[in-house]
Image (cartoon, rainbow, N blue to C red):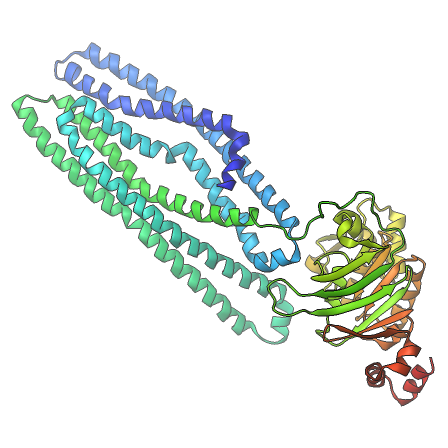
Length: 578
């Protein structure tokens, strides 16, 4: 499996760990033989020297095995922890490369579970495999062989039972894998409900939906409990069955062995050795249910992690994308562009064609669901158009390296997202090497600087998750500052001034002019559109019309109705005259 390739850097540590484990195993297998010698040649013959000799050998070997076990644990831990680190790093890097369509197939809650719980399952199994998981079957086989070496006839009972129990365990393993696959899927669901609940806690309290959310969580949590209980019950039932069989085998060996002692065909020490080997096999079988459960969960987790690692990222640099192609002026052209989201039956954009000169400010208007945000997302290649072409400075966006393309674009999404950290850190997300002067300049242009200056720690003020300690307007302006600090050639504002009053918005748009960048603004405000060089009017994914405010007031009845809906009678007359 692909996840196992992450063990390659730790091959030497694994070999050392397994070698030390074999040392422990060898000592454990030899001890019953030495015990037989102590009984038969020492105790029964009252030879204290023989007892002392083999007793000291056993103590010395036990100390050596102890040191080997401690050292084995060190190498096993190093391998398991290093493997966990590497695979989490690999998963994170893979997820960072995902396109939006990849995220639609693998929900965030599931990805979090795979990077945490699933990796931990694998990590623990790797550790166990280097400590006891491989040792357990070897101890069963080794004990059976050593018992046959001591007395073939008496130990042959083990040869009949062990293969039957082994096939039973294999069946349990296959069955357990399916059960724990289901458990991990239910865990995804619990995480999803928790994530949604925490993200929407304000709305839940405002709409008094606490009971509804508690019931929703209770349902998913109960489903997880039931599936986990079912899996654990199935796995746990194996231990009593195995112990029952092995205890019966030991009783048979004792019964048959006592008869052999009476006839003189076997010595007492030999019987003790065989019983010791059978007891050790029994003890190993008693932990097999735990090993199988761990392995079943690890196998399920491995499949889920492999699914992420094998996911094909459907939006990457084209093979002929050139390092030399850069964005210099920001001229944007859409030529007969249509677009549909992956696995959706219909287009959300239909045959869109327009051309925007560099430095122009363009307002995009339209009802909810008209395709405004979808149009925006094609410019930085968050999605690829289905047909047609999107060009910047005469170059198809697919011919420009993604890093070069996106570094030239300042994008402020409709849903503002701020990160835990200081205000300064959040602005520097736009440009990681921004100086304090650049940060303050961007904040001033975004009309957030005066607010920051009033805070106790000013730019070092720490923000809560998603900027929870800021108002909606403050978060919007801070996210705009984050986009402006990179001095973009193209600025995309997806309804990012909706929480601003008209006066603040006017100052912001005036400040943006000095950046000499091509600016796209999704807005519902006619007052904003009136100040733009061009207005694009979308309806049902189609570009109905485009032009200046004055041109659309004369040519578009839809635009006139939008104006009428936002202004009073006197204001309408003013709007129509401008």
